[in-house]
Length: 334
Ligand code: SAM
Ligand code: SF4
Image (tube, rainbow, N blue to C red):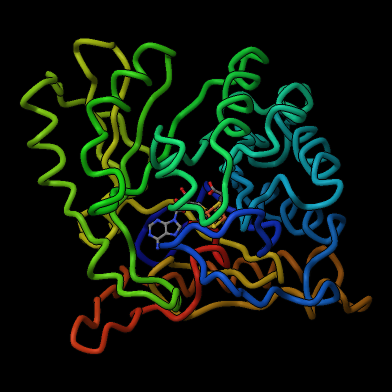
């Protein structure tokens, strides 16, 4: 699948649910209204649509959410997608199946994820301080997440810790987190907050530029440039002292759009061709119409990719303190 700007689309991110067991302050309002079940694709519908993308050349699928691991029977989807790994399809099959999770359910699921074919996971953890964690997630218990992370490590999964840089929340902690990740063999990725969805508080209070974080880290660590890229908005360095990677995700800059290799599917079957644009394609009516066969579904996916825009349009409307993209990150899964 090549889009109109010559980019090969090989990475599909799938939000399998909009629900979550936490309410991170930058992601959700406390009193979120979640979707009625009938609007959410069944696991079979998700599997069929993902299979169509794989048939068209998608090599990497990441399940996300909401919290993907709270979706009932989600392991069934991991297993069916995992069966595509290494399959010699028309386009070579799936190379990687992965997940972004808050880690709360990992302790009981890590081994099953590994058995399904997952080898690397991203776990979101903004702070190592139990009280700050509780405040950032509104009620989360860090012990559950840490147990999950170490269960995943024991199961053989490679781990990247994702932390959103939040002014006044984890601002003083990055040195400690980098050392902790180094000690346990995890990579670390710091993320700038993005203006997505109403969260009933002031986002400009939370914004912390990563350029500042990086220069502060350089006072204590040697960050060596690498050419490791994932096609996304992360820039990676090797931390000389630990040998692990640190990434900085600065989505508000435009410098990654030209290498963008990804599209995002929501749990209702809407495909967003760009995280920072409103244009989308709705696959749910097609999936639920018995007259639409696999060839027609395939043609619809190709038509959507042909509309992928050149770049995103994030603007923080600071004067009105409004998000520039109305949907929450938990809809498209980040
Ligand atoms: N629940 C899972 C988790 O927390 O990892 C997966 C979904 S979550 C929406 C995916 C990632 O998006 C998390 O690392 C989260 O911290 C990040 N995120 C959520 N809202 C964000 C925002 N407004 N700006 C930047 N990152 C955000
Ligand atoms: Fe849930 Fe992840 Fe959003 Fe936190 S960032 S509220 S864990 S979906």
